[in-house]
Length: 332
Image (cartoon, helix red, strand yellow):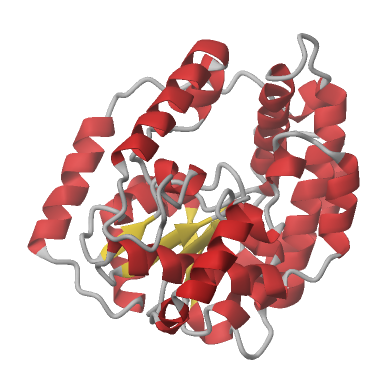
């Protein structure tokens, strides 16, 4: 239905597709590599426009979207109800991933109307969809996604630079950069084994929404396949000549140690100065989150049947590309 509403709006308001999308900042990186933290830190800069959770879930208002400005309050209230529902049914999920109705969120739901999202694979573990998604050409889907962003900008105004992020972009660099040829791509880097076990844990939480008996081993098989595909696709495409000059590398350890300095590096690459106001807002965000309770990481690859030596060998190109040493806590 959402796709049909977008297409109908574009037919009635063709000027939407002339909206400029200027040099978005797009964060790509494996799960648990700091993508959420970095996006929320950069969102302190008012010149940037992230996609909040509510807008991901319901980008179009209930009324005719051609009527501006849209009535967003009901959409925000519905997202708040969704978050509260998760808090009751899957509190551990919210402890793993900070989520609020108005918090910046990855655009996996906005990619849904284009059938270019990994939600059905990563969260719901639909094998048939996973097989199709891995083989499909998603260039049309990413072009559709660009048009969705043009629509959000047309409806809500502002023309700020979009601040996007999604791990799935790692395996879609070519479609991503064809859709956004002037993008600044920020790559967060961490041992992929951290991502594999974290994603398996997420898959288990997704199973808990549908069954009382999640299957950790099935989640491990799925996460191995997903992370391997992300890493191998990324290494394959990362050094293509037309993408090389637009990347900013952010090692996870450096981001945790000097977050504002790393954020400034990203802004500099995007030809933006770190203003005193933005620096102060970033520090307020850090202070507000300091000491905030986080879910303890009490799981590891072995809990999901993940074969550490096999993945170590599979990820050698990634380790070499970014000068990473395998995390010693994942001893074979």
